[in-house]
Length: 490
Image 1 (tube, helix red, strand yellow):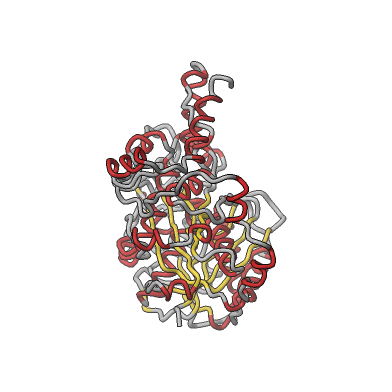
Image 2 (cartoon, helix red, strand yellow; image 1 turned 120 degrees about the horizontal axis):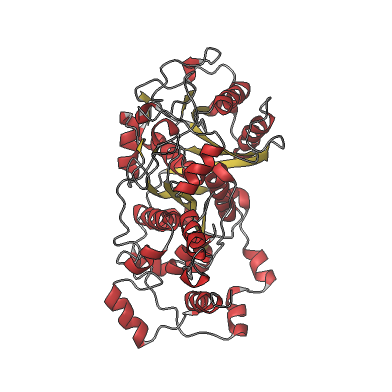
């Protein structure tokens, strides 16, 4: 451990305390076209932080008198949250429009795994990203060292800023203490940690000195914030496959409470490695339809045999309404609210009566101030598992009853299950449904379960839907339930 500590400490000190911006730093900014921790050419917030201040001065700057804070605290009910940017890295494309157009066409992103030899595994398919580049987003030197979950996260986060019209000029004008990053991960840096274990078999001296920080789930958000200079709330939440929704709702609440004006939020995961595949195979959770990958993920179909792993990231730029209007931002949708609950029942199986999910949906409606009749689109969690698909559908039927206007689909039929990133890309799908007036199909639903009301399930082709309020569900191992709601901005 003594041999690892010095480079780790050196890295952390360099990353966290490099506040000075003299001639040398300016030359670096010029040379690398963006500077910061990554030297990214598309780094949006190139800045000069100024010389380090004393601890007392910093305390005064960042923590004004409590009375002043309280007098300026806005009414939570009046602070509306809107979506002004979206960024994705997925098996179906790395642009929100490309991603959603492929969903509307019913394109499957499931294919044979190419990243490693999995010929001896019973499952050899996944929603694997075949082509991905960090050029212009992350400096090459660090791109080689980071885990993919961090690369996906940083890229999707910066793309969300670009998509949201946050130019360098606007970035320089932002009050950085009121901008935060909350992007989580279910699995974190699995590859970095796995490689470190293999290196340790030879000697601790062979281990990547970054293996500890780059394996933790919080480091993606932290690195992105360092690069942008955003000093507001910065942390990650890891609630298995419900991670993204937890992050999105918590990020929105920071804005609603008046603590921030902008938040980057969502999730990222890169689990398609031997230990990731092997772990889920051991759980007997994965589909083994290797002969026909595109047909493997089939939510609500009687022939489903497990979920299909996916990878990628989905990040939203949430913004306080008046702040967005003041800078002339395009508003894609409004975030209405959401909820979290726990089944408190079983580590991997849903509650047999769906109590946790029902409570979660009902609480989300209450938080958003929305009547159940207003919900006419649900992007379901539906992962293509036997119990999960049915219990969620039963919960939806309990909450919304016989609503002929309701349309329900599962993005995972085409992307596979992106674990902690699933809710992030599915939030983008819900927002895109609001923007376009189209909901994507449920592919592979050839033989639906007999006890389902198939009339509310979207068919094999995209359908027109004037979305009034969209509900997006995400559930995770441990009984974690989450529901979030979006609506057209009016």
